[in-house]
Image (cartoon, rainbow, N blue to C red; front, top):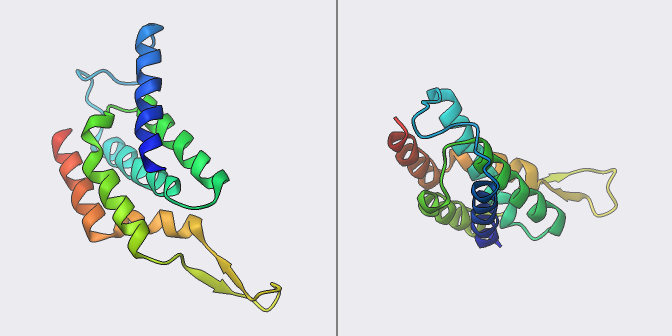
Amino acid sequence: MGISVIKTSLLALTLSSALGCSSSFSRSDKPSENTILKDINSYAIASCYTFLTEPYLMDQGDAFASAVLQRSQLHPDELTGLIDAVKIFSEQNPLPVVRSENLADGDKTLPVLFCTEVIYDSAVRTEIDKLRANYH
């Protein structure tokens, strides 16, 4: 499902170009390092949601990723390494679980926590750092 992030993002960028719209920044504008990092981290987290099994979260991740691309200087063709690292993280790590006596089955998975923590994975962080270097 993570591939739909790229397809949706490309469609959004194509439509905005055709309609004469532009993202918040042109390549000549230099966003702050904090803005660049926020956008890359947000895209990684959004991508993570697209690899989950819950349709609602997958859809939200796709929309979130599209919104990040529309407001930033990030380009879908530059994000392949990041998407691949997030996918591997998602496939190789279990969702965190909280145990509660109030729940009928005693377990509740925490996909939001899982995707928020994807940016701290070493392989994902390496891809984030590569992207940051490209935008300086």
